[in-house]
Amino acid sequence: MKTKESPLKILVCDDNPDDRKLVQLYLRNIADREIVWLEAGQKEEIEKALSRGRIDLILMDIQMPEKSGMEWLVEIVEKRVAPVVIMTGAGNEEMAVQALQEGAVNYLTKANLSEEKLVNTIDAALDKWRRMQQSMANQEELERLANFDSLTGLHNRRAILRRLDGEIKRAKRYKEELCLLMLDIDHFKNVNDQYGHLSGDEVLKEVATLVQQNIRETDTAGRYGGEEFITILPQTNLSSALDVAERIRKLIAVAKMKDAEQNVFNITVSQGLSSYKPGEDGYSLISRADDALYRAKENGRNRVETSA
Image 1 (cartoon, rainbow, N blue to C red):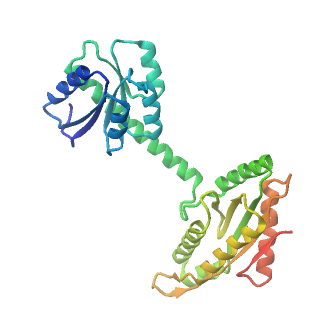
Image 2 (spheres, one colour; image 1 turned 30 degrees about the vertical axis):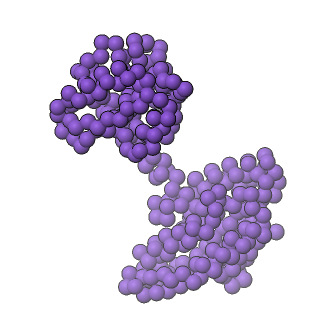
């Protein structure tokens, strides 16, 4: 191997014990890298090995009993367990292409297998896996930046509107109920003026957290803009949505906010609630919630109003 690193945990999956022994012999001869290997020849053994924790590399024979190596490959790739090198008894270009298309990081023929060939294959597979993982992490970070508000961690305006369009289509298709809650922090400018903008940011984060903690996994909360938040409540009637809104309102009203000097203060929120009407679009649903929110402000704040 090329560099001294922490022990490398390799799972060798092959129903032929002689082939497993040969691979392990080569692994044992690698002097400059500590190798920890597991071996599995049957379906139950593979499942047990995969459940034991971290695995750095899987050498998977294409011909496995009960469940083929290709089937194992698809499952392992989907779960992102570890990089997989597919092994076969003889060279098969078509099989190699298929394995790579299904997510294998490399392909190894056992015919004329040597220690050098095995080491080079392992090195190339691990290097490719590291680059793939970094690329995936970069892509996930880009998607996070594109879809989530950097301050609150909630969906940003673009993402929440896209989600709303999807939920409206679902409600229309399956004739399901759908509600939308618009929340605005009362006198938020006063918070910034009196306690500072950093405290204002902390208030936004705390409100976002309280909202997120008090909705279902199927609900979606987003920062619509400034101190305004939207929560989408699929498969929810107006009465149930009102219960959610009131619970959130009460929790925020008693939550203790703090400024930079640890001075405690309280805030309140006003909310407008609308229920999906057949045939309307996201703009209409938001507009009606916004009108209800305006009435909540006009009627004294720290309250929930529903749309007609």
